[in-house]
Length: 280
Ligand SMILES: C[S@@+](CC[C@H](N)C(=O)[O-])C[C@H]1O[C@@H](n2cnc3c(N)ncnc32)[C@H](O)[C@@H]1O
Image 1 (spheres, rainbow, N blue to C red):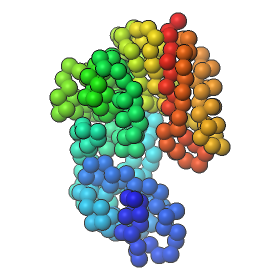
Image 2: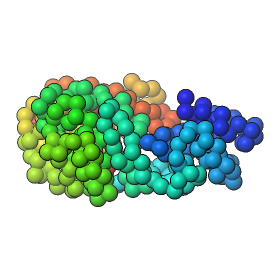
Image 3: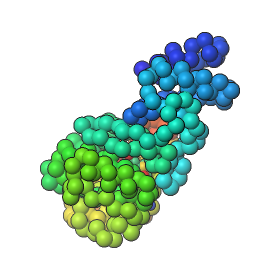
Image 4: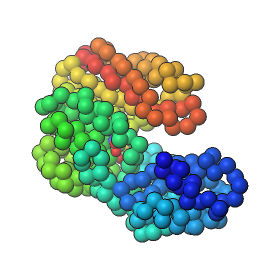
């Protein structure tokens, strides 16, 4: 829908190429639109930005110049039109989030996944979110289920925004922001959780042992990973095999269900595994 609005906005400006192929994606985060445009449009990128600004009625338009980088996962951005500010307020599932897309990772594309996981949480659970960003999963879970959520991130900018977001959503004492490497924080949170979220595919295998150690007994781990496959089923099967064979997985597996969260390229998927385990 938004992609087609952007294509309409640039009609007549970009010639006869296959527009739909050329425009690689659009994210609307609060009052900011982030677009991915092809190399051929570089010379007219600000005009494209101005058109998109008017068409979508946002405050700013940025162009994504690099994918989310390893570590803090912040994306590379170039200003195209409107206000030169990467700060905005994003609303999701009845919660409000201060976000600075120039300083922290943020993706509106995980909205359905955040709702899905929040729906799985039982009232009164203790949850650990190992890679919390600005606290999106943590706050939605705490608000909808009254859960207590230990919310870890090692990016100081994400931590500062998480604190603001906790206050903004009146969840002081329910969501506990922790500025630390998730491995270090896990040592303090050993045997304290009913459920652990691992929303960072790059560290899925390396930090799985920590996730298991934080469970106080039979509990759930939601682990996100990237997997190739000729189709979604194959990607999910491969993800299961990879995680189950992981040397870090020292737990008895009760259940393991997987699904594709989103496609991230040709035959490449983000997969989530919901695993119920008993730590050894
Ligand atoms: C994919 S983002 C999380 C997104 C978030 N769950 C959401 O829905 O908005 C991953 C986060 O993990 C953080 N991170 C990366 N390595 C980490 C580590 N070793 N320990 C703790 N946090 C880490 C990054 O700073 C980033 O904010």
